[in-house]
Image (cartoon, rainbow, N blue to C red; front, side, top):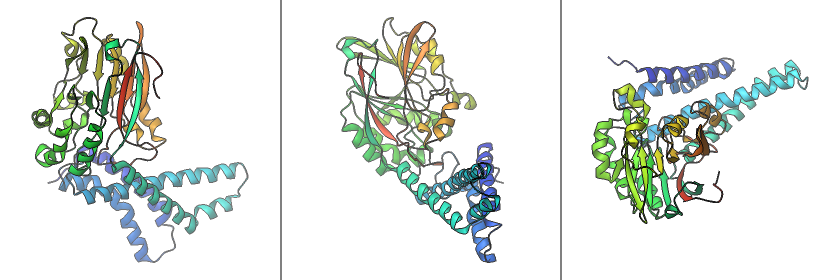
Length: 398
């Protein structure tokens, strides 16, 4: 007997609440033939079934193995419902403000809010925004070049270039062809080093391996390195830990590696993700990760989640830069404020993370090079392939 997981129940209840609101707001009071109301009711409430459908029939809600067309449709449909709820609430709030300000009478408010033309306008706008959001969310990202100033950067590392990817999410939506192009664009940068800060995959190895194979073509003189994200834990981490080296990707899990340029070392330090605790796996351990690094060597941290950057800055005084992802930049303008509150105030771009001792650690939060296939939509927050150029002087891009 199928029993939905806690995560599925939460998402289903969220979508059901939206569906119920839209039903009571538009469908129930509409003066339409019974068959029309029945179709609209099915259209509205079917969105709430998607989490259970993907878990029951396609291997899981978080790491769904649904056909790509089904994933696109489910994202579009639930996106329309979500955006319609948002724009309706905004419209009704504006009408309420006009009524309080005595710009509208109560009869005017009821007339506009109950207008069929107004409802169709809101639905059309929501569908249009959802379509644009799906297109933006699922396309291959463009390259964004950024300069990051690190005053403590050794002169030997001046001008060092890092191709930074994050949250690529190999999945039922982001398939083999997508990653062929993403890899080609990344390699064309001819960066010195490629770093991937977690959330590589959504799905188990037998299903997603073929789609992940183009990652084996990533190349850079200093190699391709990364750290795990929370989604690896949903997708059979142990199996993927055997696969990543075959793809030429070396994950740092509470460990480090020393890079050398013109005789001057620099340490890459990678931490595990805090989601490990839920699965009985190794949790983040900075002391273990930096053990054995010679004194005076600067550190670059690879940590999937940015939320504990202040902790890592204190625990690793030699860290001059932390690279993270996880937030997807908020994905939709306005949502970035909510996402920032859930991640220690960090959501996208550069931050200075102060230490009690004085010198600040630089933090860069990547807006993501892909998306989770359960919410594959972006509006005003594009994905990117980031090219970071390290310098000891000048101004960092924001």
